[in-house]
Length: 201
Image (cartoon, rainbow, N blue to C red; front, side):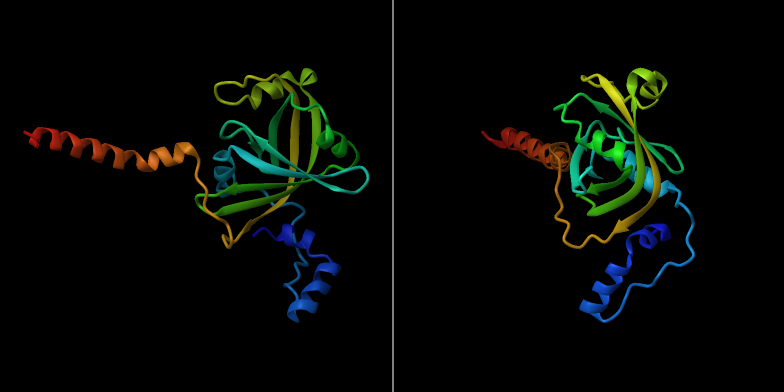
């Protein structure tokens, strides 16, 4: 756990709720760094993700949650406290982009369902026009390219992060992960079938 994360989210109202329901409060984090840099562990975890959820705050104060997906590693760690990802043309609603123009606070939620791990990230985001920053588009280009044109680049200044416990995370697996897991079984079945054919008169 990074200290700055809990220092940020443990507000007086949170402490009051803890006292009401549990008769105690979570330890306060009085002396914390201004920001918590990402470590090798966070960078490795992020590099393996092919999707994440991003929360912003609309101009009228409502939380807005959006799913982001791409090739594995499309969310790039570009510095100790910096993340970037390419924004391709979509439904053209521009809700996240417009919201960040008024309130740059952002929260990311990254899941590894098979391993039952989750990483939460707090930060400040800005959105850059890809036409004005071709060097950044080149820097974060996904492996093998992308069918859709890059229209914007999201740059996130990471404030802090927190790893959650695995409780209540249901393991889920992609088709590729299932195929990899059953490949040895299929090979063994094929081998046994071949042996049976040889033994059959």
